[in-house]
Image (cartoon, rainbow, N blue to C red; front, side, top):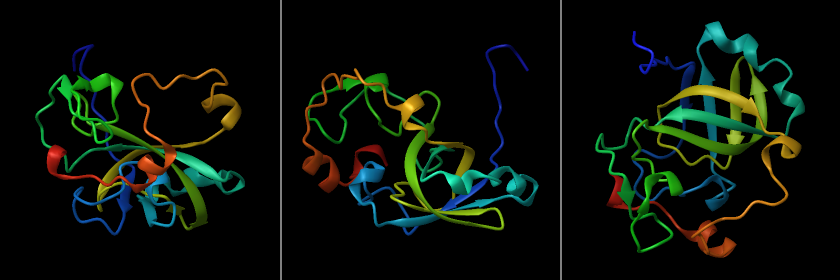
Length: 163
């Protein structure tokens, strides 16, 4: 394997009620009540020890339901102007890796039940990290071009543009 080539294997799958991206929330805040379960492979189940002390976690996953095309400019869900893909959360990316911050509901035998899930059923999960506000929320963050209100973000659902 060359220096610029990296291969990851999933540690499990994320089970959700969404059969396709069409109509699903565009971010976890879009529907905090949607429940999903991260089903870890048995070899990784010991890795969730002590995660139950956190209210939220970060899921890193592979966008397996996205088109392989990775344009460098996309029209994001919250805008009608083309933007650079790295200035968006679009699922079509040069490396189709997604990130969601979700609320931990429960942990049982290596399965992590979460609320606020925004991924397609059977999405391969690459990693789970605890969400720590002091590490993960800078006090002076700016949101660039994104001027959508919280109510817009919460009500927007994915459509066919990234299928």
